[in-house]
Length: 187
Ligand SMILES: [Fe+2]
Image (cartoon, rainbow, N blue to C red; front, side, top):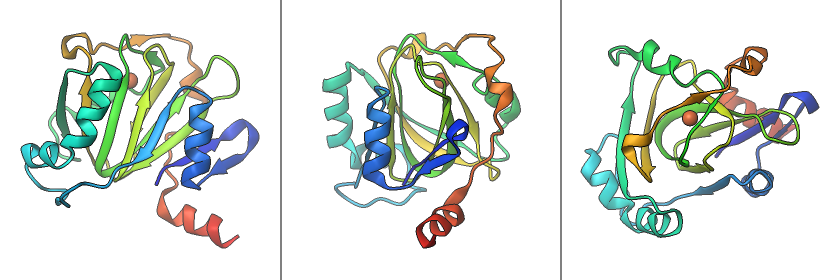
């Protein structure tokens, strides 16, 4: 499940309902998906999309998404650094950023119109829907691995618009991981 951290307030959220409620106040949808037919994280893209067809169709109907695909990033993915550099500076898109994480982890930072920057660390089973226009940036975690279903309103329009604010420079792209969650739970 996702972890939300608010560095300016030195606080974090690890409870699924609390994470969803907090993100909802910023217009970000968060939920957990369970496949109708359990499918392995290494399954072919077509099998993944088929397994989650019900959830994907529901999102398409609600958000006007027309296509879905599967992105697969590994440490040895060619030009990985160049790919990541497109998204690790504050930017926004003309359409929603919709990701369902199949495997690996990732770190979104969101710079809301009101309130401090917060980070969302996502992992397998997490669905996140960041509305168009939201200022954000994205990093992989240290293992540089993520596999995710993406939904698009217009695949040709998937372009980052950079704010050039420099706000991203003030935040470390460090994931806390499951160890952190268990430590918080024990505390
Ligand atoms: Fe983005």
